[in-house]
Length: 239
Image 1 (cartoon, rainbow, N blue to C red):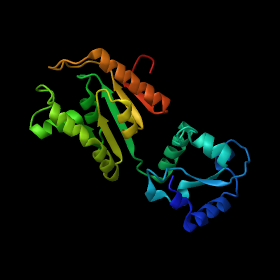
Image 2 (tube, rainbow, N blue to C red):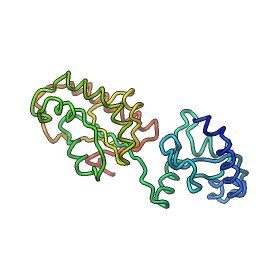
Image 3 (spheres, helix red, strand yellow):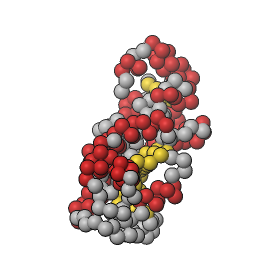
Image 4 (tube, rainbow, N blue to C red):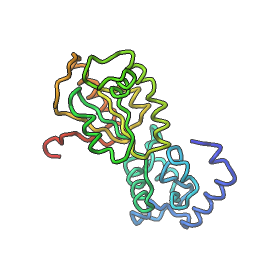
């Protein structure tokens, strides 16, 4: 949380303006027909991700700190938006035609069509693919030769800076990975996880299938624990 922002005179005036505008009533509780006193103001689109909308009245609502802000809108253990908080964000986005930033990570065994999936869904977005970047360093084609360890390490080293820059230039961001570890997931903070499950091609190199599967399963568990959307492709039966 940016304490300098929230301690500023400008914010205190804006906060009071929103509380008065909303009649000092919790706007989330009102959706349920409940009148609850509001004592704070919530940024629907978080200022950490969308600082450009920090002062917009449409992005601010009066809420009760203990009942709504700390429990219904934010997860108590990490401060992230809850599913309801995210739903409210997307609802507000639709009303105001705001291009929300969406980070999608696509994972799966080698040969499961991760790159192809992204090509079909990119829609003007931008993508980080470790294999493609590593091959660009060596002017080769992905999957046509044995992976080059040095080039892959260089490509991996670029990921953090790439992601930060991508969020400044694109709203639709894709990260293609095989089996990311928890540190990478925490750093990337994908909004959703696409898990490619069907083996479409056999790669000309060996890999530990069991170890890869454990990491993929762990990534899915991380996403579920952090209330991130998980989509399987092709869809599993019943989806």
